[in-house]
Image (cartoon, rainbow, N blue to C red; front, side, top):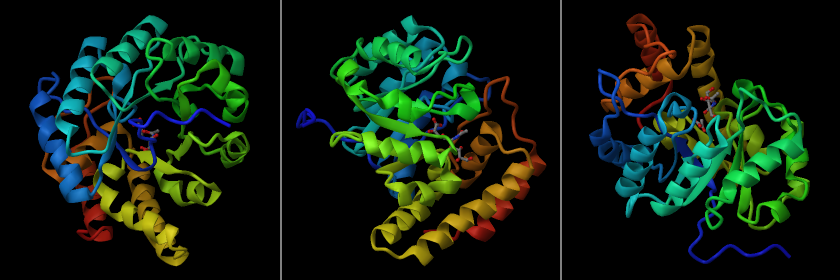
Length: 310
Ligand SMILES: CC(=O)N[C@H](C=O)[C@@H](O)[C@H](O)[C@H](O)CO
Ligand SMILES: CC(=O)C(=O)O
């Protein structure tokens, strides 16, 4: 039987918003916006779990010092209000990833997640597992998740292959955030599943398909502003109300269909969040370009026509 999670440990399940990084207009970290951001998610979207410094948070464009500052503030402001703060600590350099993993343990994050390095790419599951093991060893008591996002990293190691025997190599391993569209690979992961793991799906526009296969939850960028709707999708799914669940899923597909035609990326996504939430999140950081005002206006219009207030 798998080692049971320590009693203070919270498994990452349910709806998790991948947060944007608040910047000032000058492009510096806007730390004071994190408190209001936490309040917006909890009070307006019913979202009580966050995944910080990930793709949406532009982690790979931030310095290690900036990522530490952000992680610390998210943990501080979420305390007593949120149920889980997962900190993404992956970097191109193993040393930086270890540094951030240790820091996440020090600031009492609930868990860490790691994206594969993508300049020098691991050639196979063994190489990727070796890298992840070395990161996890810097914070051996912190629940550890692999973050699979092949469309961005170009690392196509099958997660199913990665999972074989991973609990022996990484005792803190607790699951995967699977942001890929290969549902066969996702499905095969369940045959290797351990009782204290969770497998989370990360392609918001296909979340229902992930749930059908058995996903324990979902991590995504759009849950920042459709969290309230997707909480309804989750409860409809749990009650077996598939027509209702599909209706909500189709709404996000309709919305993202237009957004993608207009060049949806982190810059566009961030601007939409600014307009929907009223938070000051600033522009993205280069090379991600700020959203053109006409694009923002069209997307906001579509958002308002599809998603009623919760
Ligand atoms: C590539 C990317 O950023 N993926 C995000 C998380 O993994 C998703 O939440 C997407 O932003 C979302 O599914 C919209 O395509
Ligand atoms: C979407 C997601 O999980 C991320 O931004 O990292």
